[in-house]
Length: 214
Image 1 (cartoon, one colour):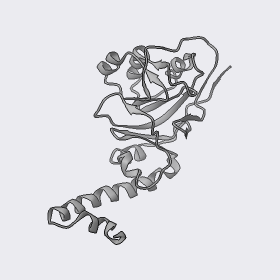
Image 2 (tube, helix red, strand yellow):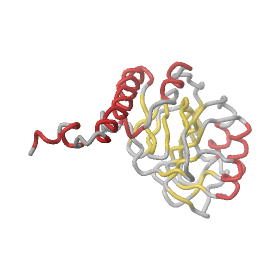
Image 3 (cartoon, rainbow, N blue to C red):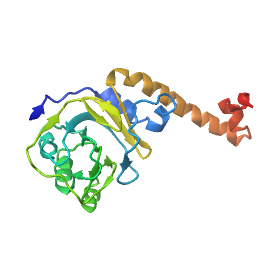
Image 4 (cartoon, rainbow, N blue to C red):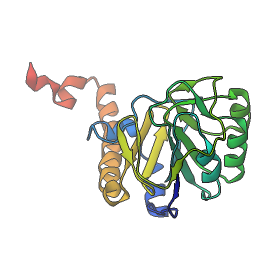
């Protein structure tokens, strides 16, 4: 059975612009939740921010991955939940070409990818758990589009904000995103002043507060 829900525009331009200034590793000082820890970028440097469009597939059937491309808009991030399959690839050169044509911001795959040279030539930002020549097929078994999915133990809903950089991927409900972003930007700005103090000869431990534990 296939299930398709309407695309959700959960993010807005203000949030997208705000998070262009934020690195996921800065958020990592603030919360343990929302990080896709088992995924790596296909290449570096890599950075993208966008609105999540989700798709879930069973082990061998990537029918829904092809169909989800009918629903994306420029700036979206396609998030593929492969239901725990870490052996097969559901994302290769042809879907990458279609995604690039649709001007997606990036792609998140809970499993493997293939056709690496083609994806690199397209310069399409992709995070995945690895690379495999063993691929899925168009079998018409089942799939879901724009439903809540799970990647690296993180629940991702359609319209969630996806923030990706060389350090990794962070996912957050847009309702709570602005507060995290403002705190992160303040922290990043404070690090500039801290570096100036280090240049003056002050110790990092005294500036960070680590000294009080010794």
